[in-house]
Every structure is written in C-alpha cells, then in structure tokens.
Length: 349
Image (tube, rainbow, N blue to C red; front, side, top):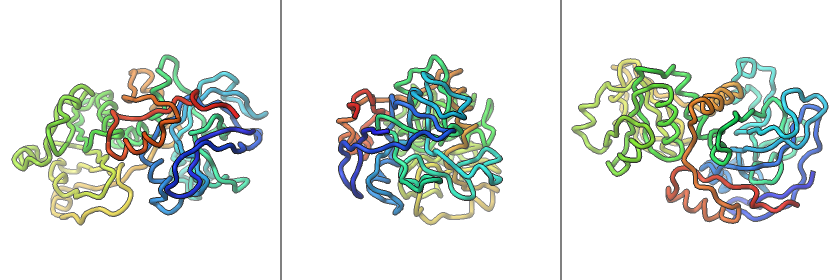
C-alpha cells in the first residue's frame, strides 16, 4: 500500500513529507486510515537518536487513532469502519511467559516498536503514525469506546498507559495517597487518572506557579519541593509517588515523603540519575522502581476506564505542517499538555 508520512531522513533531521510503502495485508492484519496521532517526547529523542537505536528514514508516532479500512482473512475482532487505536508496540513473540501474562511490553524476545523497530517476519523497519495509513497485527489493535472525543484520545496510548500502569500495579484506589512529580504531558495524565481511581492526589513542583492548574486537573493540592519546611512536614505522607521528570535529577528529597513500604516509580527519565542517599530507602522499606507502558489488555482496560469516566488529556490540535515547530515548543514545555496532529491535514498519496 502506497502511503505518505512525515519522516526524518537521518538523525537530527527535520521532518518532511515522504512517500513509502506499507506492507500488503497478512491474514491477521488490520489496515487503517490514521485520523489523529499524538506527539510524544520520545519522538524527539528518537528523531535525534538520543538512545542510539534509531532507524532511518524514520516516521515517528506511537499514539495513534484511526478507522479500519481493510482486514486480513483471519481477523475476527475488527471490521471496516471501526474506530481503533494503536500504541507503542505492534508485535511480540506471543509465546513467552510475559506475553502469556498479558505484558507484551516485557516480551523475552523484545517487543516490536511501532516505529524504529524491526518487523518480526520481514525484517523491514516499522514506521509510525505520522502517516496516512497503518497496517498492524490484529492482536495489537485496540477498540476506542464510543463517545470519546477522538481528537483527544491519542495520548492515552502512551502518556495515559504509562501513568495508568503503575497506578494499577500498586492498587491505587479510594484512600490511596499519590504524589505526582512534574505537571507536563505525563504528569497531568497521572493526576487525572489517580483522581479518577479515587486517590488523594498531590502535585510536587519546584514552585507554586502551577497550583491552580493542578487543582483544575483534579489534584487535591500542590507541594512545593523547594520549600524545605513544607517537605519536612510532608514526610511519610504518600503511598506512591509517580516521577514523570524526563531528565536526570535527584530523587533523594522525595524518598522521605513515602510512607513505610511506599514506592517511587520512574516513568520519565531513561538514562543516568543523580546519586541517591539510601538512608530513607533502607530505614523505611521504601523502593525505587521503574515502569514502562502496559500490556495490550491493560491498555484496553485504560481506554474503557477513560470512556466510562470521560477522562481525556488536555490537547492542542495541530496540522502536520506544524510538526517541527511543535517539536521545538515541546522542548521548551510550551504546550498544555499534549500536541495531537490532525492527520486529515496530510494529503493522500
């Protein structure tokens, strides 16, 4: 299938229109027209090859909402016209213990990334959702609940599931005390989802500037992390802290905020961190853990939950011609809180 997208031809390159071929449908494939695609900071990291595994030319995008236009002969769960979604992965081995547990993101053979990955059958480079069409294995396609504003659904497929998965893993619900470090694309979703699950939610920020924003999003309060006295008073007041900061930083000040047995979950930074003082960890049986996205079943659970509760990210909708400008603005944190590309702005091939 001939299609068009916006691609970086080399590491650090500007995104520009590019025609390429999507594979012909296999028996278990779903083909879709892409309606909306979210912009994730991961897209910037990948285009700049910050992690060293970028494959070029690269069409980014792993927060995808589309409409089914064709299905393979063995597809049973989707039909033409269905509204569907695709997240950060498009395949896994389906045979290992992790896949059988519904945690394909931890596949022992490695999940296949939606873009800048290798197709498990052909070996060709996968290309993402900044494109007119997408072809994906049925098992990695998700149903979008009726009634949700489709222009705002896409970020749920990464920012949403990245913050929902640790909330579910730590059984957050009524009575849970949740802290959220950072109020950006990930952080604002963590606030909305934790509040939706019934938790008491506090945003942790270096200044009080975002207090009203935090309250408007559903938080119960904001704790200024640069206020030493306030931090001392907040000792042992959280069961779970979700750290969404995407750069190297010091975790030590936050550890004493956890109650006995509490957990600080890293979902932002991938890479080096500042050295920590282990006293609060050892003396309080506290833990520092990481969390990636969720599996397919959990992602569908998230979508259904958001459909029931009408929880959606705050988005700025842009035409694809503004994608490079959006990248620069995202680097400056100049968005509240996610960019979504209206793919109707991309001409057909």
